Length: 242
Image 1 (cartoon, rainbow, N blue to C red):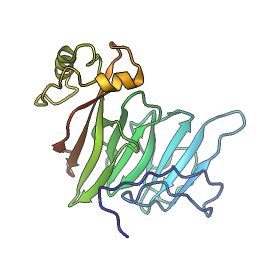
Image 2: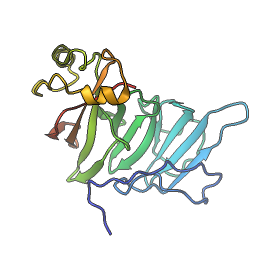
Image 3: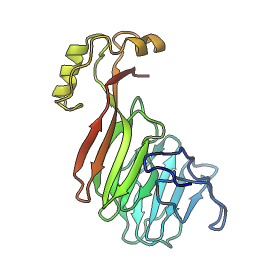
Image 4: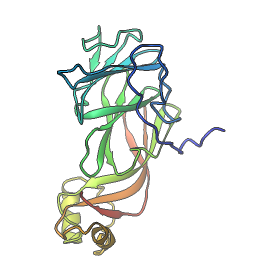
């Protein structure tokens, strides 16, 4: 049975393969394009770096991962290129250091933080240019709760998470004003109630001055030119930074 465009099942990254013909576990949820194969070069005895290559019909994504960190990934235009640490001909290096490749949908790639603190940062990248067309952060697992490709536009649904530089629990009004001033949240969002963080801080036994995370459900559409439009925003919630 086909799933709704906005129902996303969680999935594990593909296990490392020793050869091209080995079986692969699902790397991406149903709403991502299924890769042709995923291969990797295991770390050597004296090196913890792993090379991971995700192949599609028209290109390959190469990642260099070392535990909770990673180097900039690359788009290799040759879909038959070997999985190697060496740069491929005509490859485009992406600005994705510290991130992992989550999946592809049409001409868009999704990367997210490998080792987030609080909300998880993520990027949407255009496969043709390697340009970042959208950047945000989410307090969801997986990062996106739904995505769909409609007439060339990518629709994302997720719980937006914004790491605040201050504590809403300590002073909701002042902290909200600071976040507005730093363009961390939309200026037209109404200020939350003074006790919005009470339950979350009590649950986590967090001190009142611990920085907060602002959370709300949102849906965004990104057109082919990279223009993002917010389609909906849910009620504001609060969490405490870990």
